[in-house]
Structure formats: structure tokens, C-alpha cells
Amino acid sequence: MLHHISDQEYCQLIEAEFSRNESVAIKTALLNKATLKKCIISFVLCCVGDLWSSFDHYAITHDWIYTQIATGLISQAIWLTSGFLFFDATDKKERIAIGISNALGFSVGSTLMLMYLKPFFNSFF
Image 1 (cartoon, rainbow, N blue to C red):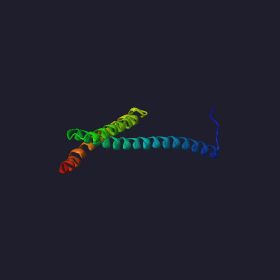
Image 2: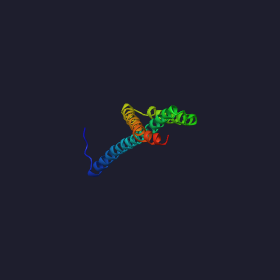
Image 3: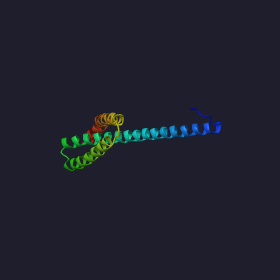
Image 4: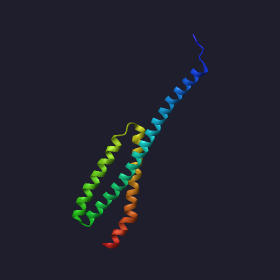
């Protein structure tokens, strides 16, 4: 059986529904911002890590022992941190986004090493 509600009660119901939907939208937006931040951090870590690992291979070629030790330790710390971000993801969409940002970071890091830094070091040694 339907009962009649006043305009004031109707407005209160609408406001309650709107505030509930608004809080869900805010949570979704914050989740998207958190995912975006994780993707950016993951991209930067993978770019720097791949650049650093490429430099490690370059140091092996020139037999720079101390450089190999430093680059080996630092690159493993970078990969470990990047792995934590991937396994901390809450759902498949977030993992796919982080995986894509990792792949882009790897490609940018390798490209930077091959195109810019390797010729720079070759000019000195």
C-alpha cells in the first residue's frame, strides 16, 4: 500500500540518495587516482630500472667491477619495488594498467640507453 509523502520528505530522500551515489563516485575517483599514481610510479621505476640494467650490461663489457656491484644491487631494489606495486593491485584492470605502464617504461629506458647515453659514454672511453 502506497502512502503519500510530503515534498519535504521527498527532497530529503533525494538528497540522501544523491549523497550515497556521490560517495560511491568519490571512492571510484579516488581509486582511479590511486591506480593512475601507481601506474606513473611503476612507469618511472621500470624506465629507471631498465636504464640502470642496460648500464649494468655496458659496465660488464668494459669490466668496471665496482660499477657492476652498485648497478646490480640498485637494479634489484628497483625491480622488487616495482613487483610490490604489481602484486598490490586489487583487480585485473589495475594489474593490466600497471603491466602496460611497465612495458612502456622498459621500452623508454632501453631506448634512452641505446640512443643517448651509450654514445655519450662511448665518446669518453
